[in-house]
Length: 304
Image (cartoon, rainbow, N blue to C red; front, side, top):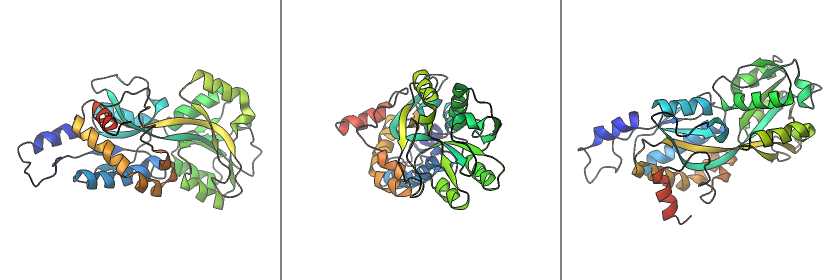
Protein backbone atom coordinates (compact mmCIF):
# COMPACT_ATOMS: atom_id res chain seq x y z
CA UNK A 1 0.00 0.00 0.00
CA UNK A 2 1.37 3.41 -0.93
CA UNK A 3 0.56 4.90 2.46
CA UNK A 4 2.40 2.20 4.39
CA UNK A 5 5.34 2.22 1.99
CA UNK A 6 5.78 5.96 2.29
CA UNK A 7 5.66 5.84 6.07
CA UNK A 8 8.25 3.07 6.21
CA UNK A 9 10.50 4.95 3.83
CA UNK A 10 10.38 8.01 6.03
CA UNK A 11 11.44 6.20 9.23
CA UNK A 12 14.84 7.26 10.43
CA UNK A 13 14.92 10.33 8.19
CA UNK A 14 12.69 12.63 10.21
CA UNK A 15 14.48 15.44 12.00
CA UNK A 16 13.20 18.09 14.37
CA UNK A 17 12.76 20.56 11.54
CA UNK A 18 10.79 18.20 9.31
CA UNK A 19 7.08 17.61 9.10
CA UNK A 20 5.64 15.08 11.54
CA UNK A 21 4.45 13.20 8.45
CA UNK A 22 7.51 13.67 6.24
CA UNK A 23 7.46 11.34 3.24
CA UNK A 24 3.75 10.66 3.51
CA UNK A 25 2.12 10.19 0.10
CA UNK A 26 -1.66 9.92 -0.19
CA UNK A 27 -4.09 9.08 -2.99
CA UNK A 28 -7.69 10.29 -2.84
CA UNK A 29 -10.38 8.56 -4.93
CA UNK A 30 -13.16 11.02 -5.81
CA UNK A 31 -15.54 10.89 -8.79
CA UNK A 32 -16.43 12.66 -12.03
CA UNK A 33 -14.52 15.89 -12.62
CA UNK A 34 -17.82 17.80 -12.77
CA UNK A 35 -19.12 16.29 -9.53
CA UNK A 36 -18.93 17.48 -5.95
CA UNK A 37 -16.64 14.60 -4.85
CA UNK A 38 -13.93 15.79 -7.24
CA UNK A 39 -14.39 19.49 -6.50
CA UNK A 40 -14.32 19.06 -2.73
CA UNK A 41 -11.60 16.40 -2.90
CA UNK A 42 -9.31 18.64 -4.95
CA UNK A 43 -9.60 21.53 -2.51
CA UNK A 44 -9.25 19.15 0.44
CA UNK A 45 -6.03 17.75 -1.04
CA UNK A 46 -4.54 21.24 -1.05
CA UNK A 47 -5.73 21.89 2.50
CA UNK A 48 -4.24 18.62 3.77
CA UNK A 49 -0.95 19.35 2.05
CA UNK A 50 -0.77 22.62 3.96
CA UNK A 51 -2.04 21.43 7.34
CA UNK A 52 0.04 18.23 7.45
CA UNK A 53 3.03 19.79 5.62
CA UNK A 54 3.14 16.96 3.07
CA UNK A 55 3.18 16.64 -0.71
CA UNK A 56 -0.22 17.43 -2.15
CA UNK A 57 -2.23 14.17 -2.28
CA UNK A 58 -2.97 12.75 -5.72
CA UNK A 59 -6.63 13.24 -6.66
CA UNK A 60 -8.09 10.48 -8.82
CA UNK A 61 -11.08 11.02 -11.10
CA UNK A 62 -13.15 7.82 -10.83
CA UNK A 63 -16.54 6.33 -11.69
CA UNK A 64 -17.65 6.99 -8.12
CA UNK A 65 -18.36 5.23 -4.85
CA UNK A 66 -18.22 1.59 -5.95
CA UNK A 67 -14.88 2.03 -7.70
CA UNK A 68 -13.58 4.10 -4.79
CA UNK A 69 -14.41 1.37 -2.28
CA UNK A 70 -12.77 -1.24 -4.50
CA UNK A 71 -9.65 0.92 -4.69
CA UNK A 72 -9.50 1.24 -0.91
CA UNK A 73 -9.87 -2.49 -0.42
CA UNK A 74 -7.25 -3.18 -3.12
CA UNK A 75 -4.80 -0.69 -1.61
CA UNK A 76 -4.66 1.58 -4.70
CA UNK A 77 -6.19 4.52 -2.82
CA UNK A 78 -5.72 5.71 0.76
CA UNK A 79 -8.79 7.94 1.16
CA UNK A 80 -12.08 7.84 -0.72
CA UNK A 81 -15.43 9.51 -0.96
CA UNK A 82 -18.25 6.97 -0.71
CA UNK A 83 -22.01 6.92 -0.35
CA UNK A 84 -23.56 4.78 2.36
CA UNK A 85 -25.66 2.75 -0.09
CA UNK A 86 -22.55 1.53 -1.93
CA UNK A 87 -21.12 -0.08 1.21
CA UNK A 88 -22.19 -3.69 1.64
CA UNK A 89 -19.72 -5.00 4.23
CA UNK A 90 -17.27 -2.64 5.89
CA UNK A 91 -15.26 -5.58 7.25
CA UNK A 92 -14.89 -7.56 4.02
CA UNK A 93 -11.42 -8.45 2.80
CA UNK A 94 -7.99 -7.86 4.35
CA UNK A 95 -8.46 -4.08 4.48
CA UNK A 96 -11.47 -3.09 6.58
CA UNK A 97 -13.29 0.12 5.74
CA UNK A 98 -13.19 2.80 8.40
CA UNK A 99 -14.67 6.29 8.38
CA UNK A 100 -13.14 9.68 9.04
CA UNK A 101 -16.41 11.61 8.89
CA UNK A 102 -19.88 11.82 7.49
CA UNK A 103 -19.69 14.85 5.22
CA UNK A 104 -22.83 15.78 3.25
CA UNK A 105 -25.75 14.05 1.56
CA UNK A 106 -26.10 13.17 -2.11
CA UNK A 107 -29.42 13.97 -3.77
CA UNK A 108 -30.79 11.62 -6.42
CA UNK A 109 -31.44 13.90 -9.38
CA UNK A 110 -33.39 12.49 -12.34
CA UNK A 111 -32.84 15.04 -15.08
CA UNK A 112 -35.16 15.13 -18.12
CA UNK A 113 -35.49 17.39 -21.13
CA UNK A 114 -38.16 19.98 -20.34
CA UNK A 115 -39.53 19.80 -23.89
CA UNK A 116 -40.48 16.12 -23.54
CA UNK A 117 -43.69 14.80 -21.91
CA UNK A 118 -41.87 13.18 -19.02
CA UNK A 119 -43.38 13.99 -15.63
CA UNK A 120 -43.28 10.59 -13.88
CA UNK A 121 -40.97 7.59 -13.79
CA UNK A 122 -43.40 5.61 -15.97
CA UNK A 123 -42.84 8.16 -18.76
CA UNK A 124 -39.22 6.99 -19.03
CA UNK A 125 -40.29 3.56 -20.34
CA UNK A 126 -38.49 2.72 -23.57
CA UNK A 127 -36.52 5.98 -23.59
CA UNK A 128 -32.74 6.39 -23.69
CA UNK A 129 -31.69 7.08 -20.12
CA UNK A 130 -28.14 7.43 -18.87
CA UNK A 131 -27.98 5.51 -15.61
CA UNK A 132 -24.38 6.36 -14.76
CA UNK A 133 -21.15 4.50 -15.49
CA UNK A 134 -20.52 0.91 -14.52
CA UNK A 135 -18.98 0.86 -11.06
CA UNK A 136 -20.80 3.98 -9.90
CA UNK A 137 -23.21 4.53 -7.05
CA UNK A 138 -25.34 6.49 -9.51
CA UNK A 139 -26.00 3.32 -11.51
CA UNK A 140 -26.67 1.40 -8.32
CA UNK A 141 -29.43 3.76 -7.17
CA UNK A 142 -30.77 4.31 -10.70
CA UNK A 143 -31.29 0.57 -11.14
CA UNK A 144 -32.95 0.32 -7.74
CA UNK A 145 -35.41 3.10 -8.56
CA UNK A 146 -36.25 1.78 -12.03
CA UNK A 147 -36.67 -1.77 -10.71
CA UNK A 148 -38.92 -0.55 -7.91
CA UNK A 149 -40.99 1.44 -10.41
CA UNK A 150 -41.06 -1.56 -12.80
CA UNK A 151 -39.88 0.68 -15.63
CA UNK A 152 -37.70 -0.63 -18.45
CA UNK A 153 -35.55 1.93 -20.23
CA UNK A 154 -32.89 1.83 -22.92
CA UNK A 155 -29.95 2.25 -20.52
CA UNK A 156 -26.79 4.13 -21.39
CA UNK A 157 -23.72 3.71 -19.15
CA UNK A 158 -22.30 7.23 -19.07
CA UNK A 159 -20.69 9.54 -16.57
CA UNK A 160 -22.10 12.96 -15.80
CA UNK A 161 -19.97 14.83 -18.33
CA UNK A 162 -20.96 12.56 -21.22
CA UNK A 163 -24.61 12.54 -20.13
CA UNK A 164 -24.70 16.33 -20.28
CA UNK A 165 -23.10 16.37 -23.73
CA UNK A 166 -25.50 13.73 -25.07
CA UNK A 167 -28.56 15.47 -23.65
CA UNK A 168 -27.48 18.78 -25.15
CA UNK A 169 -27.29 17.02 -28.55
CA UNK A 170 -30.57 15.16 -28.13
CA UNK A 171 -28.99 11.72 -27.96
CA UNK A 172 -30.56 10.82 -24.61
CA UNK A 173 -33.88 11.82 -23.06
CA UNK A 174 -32.92 11.70 -19.39
CA UNK A 175 -30.12 10.87 -17.01
CA UNK A 176 -29.74 9.99 -13.36
CA UNK A 177 -27.22 11.77 -11.21
CA UNK A 178 -26.44 11.22 -7.54
CA UNK A 179 -24.55 14.18 -6.14
CA UNK A 180 -24.53 17.20 -3.93
CA UNK A 181 -26.60 20.26 -4.69
CA UNK A 182 -26.06 22.34 -6.58
CA UNK A 183 -24.08 20.47 -9.22
CA UNK A 184 -22.83 23.36 -11.29
CA UNK A 185 -22.71 21.50 -14.60
CA UNK A 186 -26.47 20.86 -14.34
CA UNK A 187 -27.08 24.56 -13.94
CA UNK A 188 -24.88 25.20 -16.97
CA UNK A 189 -26.80 22.60 -19.01
CA UNK A 190 -30.11 24.31 -18.33
CA UNK A 191 -28.81 27.45 -19.99
CA UNK A 192 -28.43 25.62 -23.32
CA UNK A 193 -31.11 22.91 -23.10
CA UNK A 194 -34.11 23.44 -20.80
CA UNK A 195 -34.25 20.60 -18.29
CA UNK A 196 -36.13 19.74 -15.12
CA UNK A 197 -35.88 17.26 -12.26
CA UNK A 198 -38.51 14.58 -11.77
CA UNK A 199 -40.48 14.97 -8.55
CA UNK A 200 -40.69 11.55 -6.90
CA UNK A 201 -43.68 12.63 -4.82
CA UNK A 202 -45.65 12.06 -8.03
CA UNK A 203 -44.56 8.42 -7.75
CA UNK A 204 -45.42 8.11 -4.06
CA UNK A 205 -45.63 4.32 -4.19
CA UNK A 206 -42.11 4.13 -5.54
CA UNK A 207 -40.84 6.65 -3.00
CA UNK A 208 -42.42 4.72 -0.12
CA UNK A 209 -41.09 1.38 -1.37
CA UNK A 210 -37.55 2.74 -1.76
CA UNK A 211 -37.59 4.08 1.79
CA UNK A 212 -38.90 0.78 3.15
CA UNK A 213 -36.65 -1.51 1.12
CA UNK A 214 -33.48 0.54 1.49
CA UNK A 215 -33.40 2.31 4.87
CA UNK A 216 -30.10 3.98 3.97
CA UNK A 217 -32.09 6.50 1.90
CA UNK A 218 -34.15 9.35 3.28
CA UNK A 219 -36.79 11.58 1.71
CA UNK A 220 -35.35 14.95 0.79
CA UNK A 221 -36.21 18.16 -1.03
CA UNK A 222 -34.20 19.96 -3.69
CA UNK A 223 -35.12 23.56 -2.87
CA UNK A 224 -36.77 25.82 -5.44
CA UNK A 225 -34.21 27.89 -7.30
CA UNK A 226 -31.38 25.39 -6.89
CA UNK A 227 -30.90 25.34 -10.66
CA UNK A 228 -32.03 28.83 -11.54
CA UNK A 229 -34.84 31.05 -10.36
CA UNK A 230 -37.45 29.13 -12.36
CA UNK A 231 -36.66 25.67 -11.00
CA UNK A 232 -39.39 24.37 -8.64
CA UNK A 233 -38.96 22.47 -5.41
CA UNK A 234 -38.89 18.72 -5.99
CA UNK A 235 -39.05 15.72 -3.68
CA UNK A 236 -36.40 13.05 -4.09
CA UNK A 237 -34.14 10.68 -2.14
CA UNK A 238 -30.92 11.49 -0.32
CA UNK A 239 -28.08 9.28 0.85
CA UNK A 240 -25.22 10.14 3.26
CA UNK A 241 -21.66 10.48 2.03
CA UNK A 242 -18.74 9.30 4.12
CA UNK A 243 -15.04 10.06 3.90
CA UNK A 244 -13.47 6.61 3.99
CA UNK A 245 -10.08 5.06 4.77
CA UNK A 246 -9.10 1.56 5.90
CA UNK A 247 -7.87 0.08 9.15
CA UNK A 248 -4.36 0.14 7.64
CA UNK A 249 -4.12 3.91 8.15
CA UNK A 250 -2.10 4.88 11.25
CA UNK A 251 -4.13 6.49 14.02
CA UNK A 252 -2.10 9.72 14.08
CA UNK A 253 -2.53 10.22 10.33
CA UNK A 254 -6.27 9.64 10.52
CA UNK A 255 -6.60 12.08 13.42
CA UNK A 256 -4.62 14.73 11.54
CA UNK A 257 -6.74 14.26 8.42
CA UNK A 258 -9.96 14.77 10.37
CA UNK A 259 -8.55 17.87 12.03
CA UNK A 260 -7.51 19.21 8.63
CA UNK A 261 -10.97 18.49 7.23
CA UNK A 262 -12.71 20.71 9.78
CA UNK A 263 -10.05 23.41 9.61
CA UNK A 264 -10.68 23.56 5.84
CA UNK A 265 -14.50 23.47 6.01
CA UNK A 266 -14.85 27.12 5.01
CA UNK A 267 -12.59 26.64 1.99
CA UNK A 268 -14.56 23.58 0.88
CA UNK A 269 -17.87 25.48 1.00
CA UNK A 270 -16.40 28.06 -1.39
CA UNK A 271 -15.84 25.29 -3.93
CA UNK A 272 -19.38 23.91 -3.55
CA UNK A 273 -22.10 24.86 -1.10
CA UNK A 274 -22.82 21.15 -0.49
CA UNK A 275 -19.82 21.31 1.85
CA UNK A 276 -21.75 23.67 4.14
CA UNK A 277 -23.29 20.49 5.57
CA UNK A 278 -19.94 19.30 6.94
CA UNK A 279 -20.39 19.63 10.69
CA UNK A 280 -18.40 18.15 13.56
CA UNK A 281 -21.57 17.22 15.47
CA UNK A 282 -23.07 15.09 12.66
CA UNK A 283 -19.75 13.79 11.33
CA UNK A 284 -19.69 10.89 13.79
CA UNK A 285 -22.80 9.26 12.30
CA UNK A 286 -21.01 7.17 9.69
CA UNK A 287 -23.13 4.01 9.65
CA UNK A 288 -22.68 1.39 8.25
CA UNK A 289 -18.92 2.05 8.63
CA UNK A 290 -17.31 2.35 12.08
CA UNK A 291 -15.16 5.36 12.82
CA UNK A 292 -11.40 4.95 12.53
CA UNK A 293 -9.76 5.02 15.99
CA UNK A 294 -7.79 8.11 14.96
CA UNK A 295 -11.03 9.86 14.00
CA UNK A 296 -12.54 8.85 17.34
CA UNK A 297 -9.58 10.44 19.08
CA UNK A 298 -10.20 13.70 17.25
CA UNK A 299 -13.90 13.78 18.14
CA UNK A 300 -13.10 13.04 21.78
CA UNK A 301 -10.65 15.92 21.84
CA UNK A 302 -13.29 18.15 20.24
CA UNK A 303 -15.73 17.00 22.94
CA UNK A 304 -18.32 15.84 20.40
